[in-house]
Length: 613
Image (cartoon, rainbow, N blue to C red; front, side, top):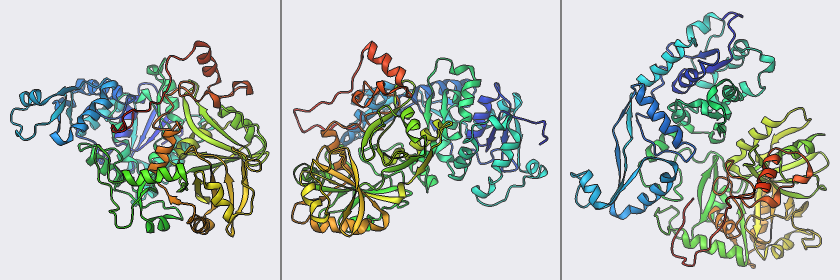
């Protein structure tokens, strides 16, 4: 590559994702497509789906899928077939859930009762007297042909494709070892190839490197098959995709969907991607737990909880106790559309938190320190609530986007004049870090992920004060330790930082303990709690308690598509404090009035079960 060959974008990897992205960018920019093998994308069809339908994803994905199906049909690489999703008579709830999920998205589906199913599929066995959903626009994909179509489109628009041999000639030989080493040349190649490197967003090459080293090919497959990538901002491809939005004409007036691929990353992504594909056509039972790529991240209390009957689930790689089995009870999920085998266990845990005291291991909380002379100004610009509070105060807040949508739901504790401690859901940690780093401008502030430095033990329930006073000399009265405050305490023979906040609606404290003291503090709490009804509790109980209190949960109740006022969180928005991201949208919404509002219903009949939204 000569110095004269400058490009607007350098795409690493000429597989399905890289080729499709190059084809979309090519009419609008100068693109370099780099492949670490001798042949562009020789591995491109390895995990690409050969069968595709419109019933995938949510309301933000289905419209893209429909447009893409039409586009690919026109290109001659897709053959519409149609499909019927069958449900045995004992599993009709799966059809109910399927229709409830996809009918509002615009997916072209039709419910078939027993008679209609028999007419549509006359050779079906008589004992399959269930129901079905017809999806008329399912299709087979010529995956290899689609990949060549993308490469051909890219070449016709001037994309330069550079493979192993030419890189070697240019002094950038690629090691023949595993992916991370093979892509070790990324920074140098991109720095030389891209126009105006001084003005290129500083996180671009870092983001590209993360995508490569986490081996996210399986995660990217469905994105690769969506030809209209210009309607989507993929955050982890770096700020380059934001530039893609700027140079394409399709984005006029369109608010892009934003994915942070890194948030899905972690050890064992390959295995998880394969397993997810295998689960696509079976019953989608509520609370189904993943089985692949497990045991990657374990808290210091993992073995203690396991010995006491914990049945674990996984979020963001963390093994978390979802419920606790009784002695002699099977420690497995038995899935059903009705009350599952852990329902009574979770009920007992819930009542313990409501009437006595429960202990949760919430080490998986994402923990972020933001510090520096401009830390307050930086966070005031990102957060909707007022963070200019005395040290030791805890503020519940959201980070909003320009539309007033909720990008993050978190608490911020002011540790000192220049230091703040942010607590976010474990599942959104990488997303929240990306949002913070993306918006850090000229402010002097340092953002540090400190998640692994501390365990979190949540002691919750009306007897929480009685218990903790047995093992700590500190004063936990309302007068000395008010709600929404944090302070250092002694507990057992260890130290902790106690936050008086709650996600279950009961009296309690979140105890942040250094990882090396976590087991000691747990043992001290367990011993002291024997005579006050202490019960170990799992994440299912945390969820039911917070629903009972109407506390919101990011990902289920609220997302970046939900307005903060419509979500009922206007109490945490302080427009009088000055400018912040989303303030104009909030003021406009308040002036116009709400057209919709999130509400909660209490069922008169306790028998029905409501799952998701």
